[in-house]
Length: 95
Image (cartoon, rainbow, N blue to C red; front, side, top):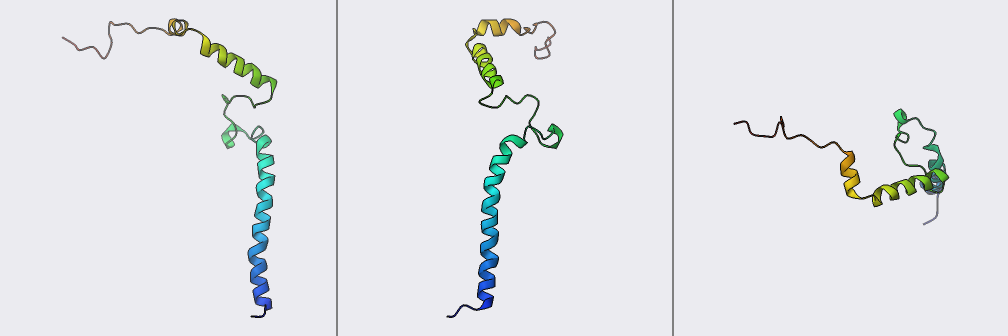
């Protein structure tokens, strides 16, 4: 079956968007790594409590602090938290 101009037009119409979308995927992958830092939180950017990016000096400090907290004894962590009092607790049955 000979290729007509109609077949060629359909083939181009299907092939060109596929090639274009493939290029956008690699561009967006590279841009997305850094652009999230500049988008405000209200517009979907990083939250205020997000950890620093890997490979930065802030990340190394963050990981050291996290490891220090993980290795600290549980008794110290429990002592820092206020203990609930047993008098007047809403969960105690009233007699």
